[in-house]
Amino acid sequence: MMRRLLTGVIVAVCASAGVVPAAGASVLPGSGDRLTVTVSGSGSAGGDGTFQLVCGPVGGDHPRAEKACEQLDELARGGSDPFAPVPRDAICTMQYGGPATARVTGSWQGRSVDAVFGRGNGCEISRWDVMGPVLPETGLETGLEAGSEAGPGGAV
Image (cartoon, rainbow, N blue to C red; front, side, top):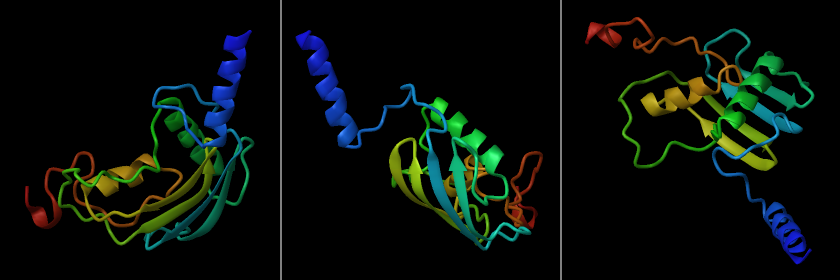
């Protein structure tokens, strides 16, 4: 009896402190997530603007809401935090993915989100791409897409 009470108190304290589940912990996909996605410089038709994305149930005016919610649910099930910034000590390719920027704010998996995305190096490009279809495809080719043998300017 005392053990159950203590467990309940610990769970309540963790929840009120905003503690999020560790990677690999079970989370409930689409638990009322509400995000505002603001994109500029994407170079894609209809890609720029501010969009509301609601998951669980799907809603908002995001142009690919259903697929975006599916992607976020998949990332949550995998224990990934797609809103985490690139670590400062990450070694990233010197690759320019274009001027596109995005800011995502709101709540996801029961926690507050305020994340900024860009395409200024290989790490940031990968981070952006993991978020597709939450973030739009961009109109600028990096020269290093799948099947490409040469970088910009033909250099290998």
